[in-house]
Length: 117
Image 1: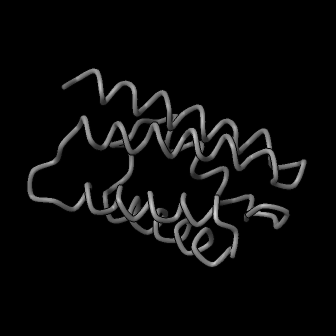
Image 2: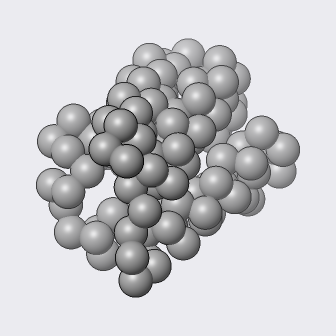
Image 3: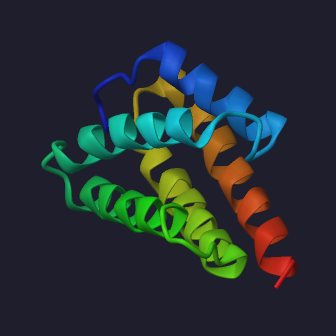
């Protein structure tokens, strides 16, 4: 991601999915999107991005347990949002705003879930 462009369609789909609400897409589609992001981050060779990839793995685990923990999912989303905002500074200039939008939406959605505990 950093210095390498992310597919614009994936950025746009992620933004739209977050804006429409966390339950607006089927879990299988969300997991596919998370997997695509995770692979990009883990294969980046950059420690900060690999940390995001690992947190995505944590989120995937939280989403596939038999009993969902909204607070833990919210905390994971908030952490991913913060990490994404930090990573946006090193992304290509034309993608920084979209990545910050994703980061801000993740933080917002995470806080909403965390409040419901």
